[in-house]
Amino acid sequence: MYVPEEKISEILNTSDIVELVSESVILKKSGRNFFGLCPFHSEKTPSFSVNPNKQIFYCFGCGAGGNALAFVMKYHGIGFPEAARMLARKHNIPIETKDLDPAKKQQIQSRESLFRLNKKVMSYYSGILKEDPAGKIAGAYLEKRGTHPDIIDRFCLGYSADKWDGAVGFLRKEKVGRKTALNSGLILPRKQGQGFYDRFRNRIMFPIFDINMQVAGFGGRVMDDAMPKYLNSPETPVYSKGRILYGLHAAKQHCRQEGSVYIVEGYFDFLSLFQHGIKNCVASLGTALTSEHVRILKGYASKMVLVFDSDAAGINAAKRSIKIFMQEGVDTRILVLPDGNDPDSFVMSRGRDAWDGVAKGAKTIMEFLLHLSMETHGLTVEGRVKILEDMKAYLAEISDSALRSLYVKELSETLNIDEKAVLEKVRDQVNRKGSHAPRGRLEEEIPKESDPLEEQLVSMMLNFPETIPDLIQAKVFDFFQSDRLRKIAQLISRTDPGDSGLVNEILGRVGGEADQELIASLAMKGSMAKEEEKVENIHETAGDIIKRFIRVRKKNENKITTKIISAERGGDADVMELLKLKQQEIQEYSR
Image 1: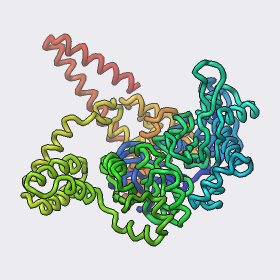
Image 2: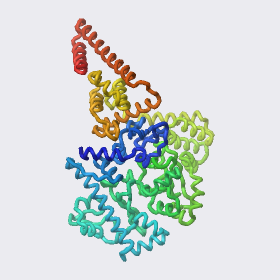
Image 3: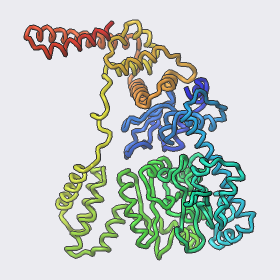
């Protein structure tokens, strides 16, 4: 184990999986379990379930499952030791790793070194803004823009001085190692090969926090017309632009309260909205929005409003983002601000009430696209044909057939084109799209290692531990044909439930993600069946299942024996050889 076993038990016993998952997924109680939209795949109907009694999660859509540690690992894309340390810090549990693989140890140390360094650098930039004479120009710039001192303090804004070696000198003074300094992305090697220089120079600095309130990276904005206008940290072991949204750490609870989130493009757009009390907002760091961004946001808001400038660049940015939101099946609106405004200038000049007014007019995706296409092509006969060509590609992206039908009807009425003709165009597009669709996680790509009867027995063990002695006495495991399920069943039979419960103990002992997902699946499905069906005498029920299972296995064994005899009589050497091998395999299981 990378982390002492007793610490793992302490972490799992202290963590409440409903509370933990609720930080990232909107959960609603149904029966004994909680359900929400899965953060690991696209879906409209909640299939992601959390069981508070067993302290596990399982998605009936994509198969992801496990305990609290497994959720943290999968959600944050980190390894087991890091997940354990993250939860340990959350609950103030002291933890020391042991027997850690050198490469893994180095990876963990590298991440932690970067977080520590980024926090120091944040203070360094903030200090220049507030105390250094060089920061007066930046302070005056922020004041001119109307950025309140409270906002500056809350989001730890700073300033990078107009020199090439400011951060270089600070890192040297702090005795930061060369490798860590380069990994941070704060400095770059000189082309001549001698020395380093600052990435950020003469810019307002915005620390970028991850969802756990740690400084993952930085963004810098110029105060004049220099290019590039915005400059962000490069990808590092702690900063991934495809996963982090600026301001989410501060906005997440407000998004939940409102049930919606405004998605803007720039740092100042976010800060100005937040300053004016519109706190359910995030910024995309000036990069393209990703499916991961949308899935993360789905954990905090059921409705998303994309806010764009009314210029050509803003319109094109809206069009680029739309497909992702359609594919993720989320309720999305498009808000294009009037008169060439961006969110910052609009709310600063017109205030909160004006913002709320225009926000009410935010269009659905289809309304926005149709309006745009009509403005471009007009409503002549030729124009309507072109509008239909534009819209069919977007309609084909809608996975919900009922919703697609409603939009097809609306489009046919707007364009005065027969609904069947519109539907035919869209169907052709859907078929064409399907023929070129990339292969997903197809069933045939995953080896079938399970048998329904064997799964039922393992599920029974997990949900009714009192039946385990019955299975051991009947030597049921000897009849298992799935090596994987037999090993899991044997592990269950040897495990003391402890304080954290049998399922949690088992999940803590298996290493592979696939095995964890299988165990979570069997525990969750069995738990739901247990809730629906009240078993009067579990030992009697278990006995019946065991007898049926052994009877089926012996019947199959007899069938194979008969086939071997038949093959021998018929002289079919190839078939006979295969059947003998199969018979030997079954006899080995039956010993």
